[in-house]
Length: 332
Image (cartoon, rainbow, N blue to C red; front, side, top):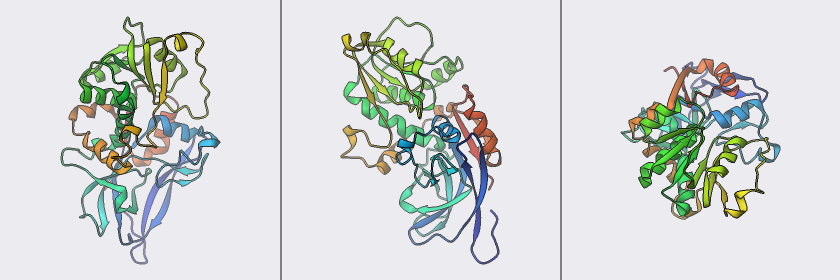
């Protein structure tokens, strides 16, 4: 890492989204961490494809500019904005953790950074730095399963086999021991589901109806599919964020006669069933601990160097249906 003349000034590089389908890498100067703070050198970060694609193209609704700001974000929507929340690094300075300690932080894509010690989570021994980039998505999935506890049923499925959908299905199976079906049109998801202990149903017809459904496709068609697959008095846990897109649903059909329920789940608030006993930090630490299974490595479908991030983000925002977690690698 480059050090400027003039004492302990260090240059860091960070990725900024312009909010118009373009981005760039900018330099900034860091000083020594103050008391109670840490200097972290980044090893890996991960792109949250759905949310970051919306940010990249400027799709965050004005009404959500404040609520959708991520921790340590700089700039404001629609952009330029430094955005991201899946960073893994090692401690390089500070007075609260030993140098070299591997940590996770909800920090944007940046080569090194300073943040309060309470904002980092040391990695457990069984969780590798490479796999720990899944932590933010695992936290979303964990909150979704907590939100669904009151509606728990043996007939359950996931519509949308992206990162959040697959992790939610994985946790439901891991916690409850129930068979979990995954509906997704991308056929390569079949092999991934098999490695995670899930049943792949594709996008075709299915004779069963489900009493608990997690919707994570971020499409109108996917949510309509959830309604079609819902059994009598079923609960649909809605995990998708649509940004500035409107969704139309056929609520004049079976929705009322079948007494269906659509319940939102969003990681910004701890699920009500656990709110008294778990703060955000405890929930994130639990999510990181759940990354102890090597089978989860199948979710990392690509890796690129940090310098390529503007081009990678543009490619992912244009589609890339085969991509699950794309990991960004930082040089030492």
